[in-house]
Image 1 (cartoon, one colour):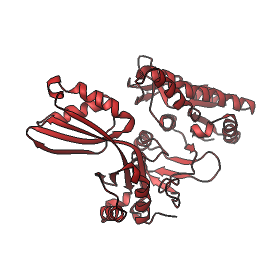
Image 2: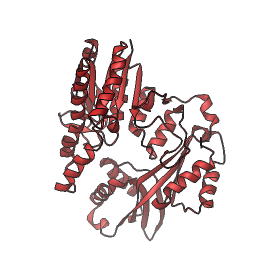
Image 3: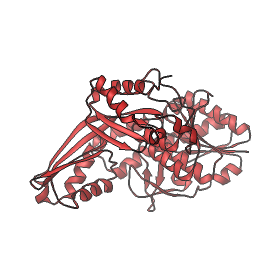
Image 4: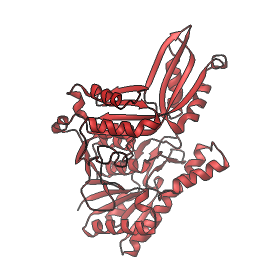
Length: 405
């Protein structure tokens, strides 16, 4: 007997027919004698619809009320999935994140998990039932419903797999696995058989939509080996695990594209020690993730800071920065935001191979694509480009590194 965690995304449970298909897949595992925990997202489009309704009433809705609202999408799906299993003669019971004992901090709309008790999940599994868990949600110490942000059901699946010491964790989605690039952008992108946590984390944080980056971080921290695979067929997917020696033979594993970025320029900052700390502490307190950071030289006692954030965080960033500086210092400050796209090359082989940056820059230069920002890590190089050039940049870079299948 194995304990299996399966996660199904919104497209996999988009309607009644697809929920029935998921139930049939779960039944196969249950009939084989395995204990199964199924983590589900809201049906495709439901969360977006709830958000649009909220913003029709208030352009900047309260975060606590947004968590209360959007958490119902997953609760609908767990009940429907349990009912579909009942119709197949499979004993099943649904559980919300709070019922599963998923405890978080009190940051609404992007909460972080602090502990997991599991609630009565083990008892239900031992009684022969399939447990259907609502992804994306938990509760704070004061009993408030909290959510994990976009893609948070991935985090729920990885976290519950770690807490239960599951034998297998499958992230079932609408793609066959992790590809060298988005197949919708690069037609000859190929599926990877395996990828390291580090590479998957860099790809996820750079715009690959297959996995939420926080889920990959959690998997790496607790060594949860998982498989990204399709929920529509039984083909093998991509195994995500610790780095193996053979992985360094491949210089670049993939190219990621993120169109949902904004370049923010803050000018006329006081050019003195502590200004950058004050600025980025304010963004951190607001739960805003910052990527590329460039600080210009100070002139006449004023400094200029450029950085990138997710596009939906522009308003939150501006609000946080306004509140972080005294009125007399804010009066001369200039805040500007521009849309930008980020193209990233990722590979653990970059540690031991030279020339990656040269190949990247040559490819973009030959295509006459201008680079606005550059950031690097040990296994990643990212460049900021105009949104109109983003897809072409991805294609030429993918070709330059010989990643096509």
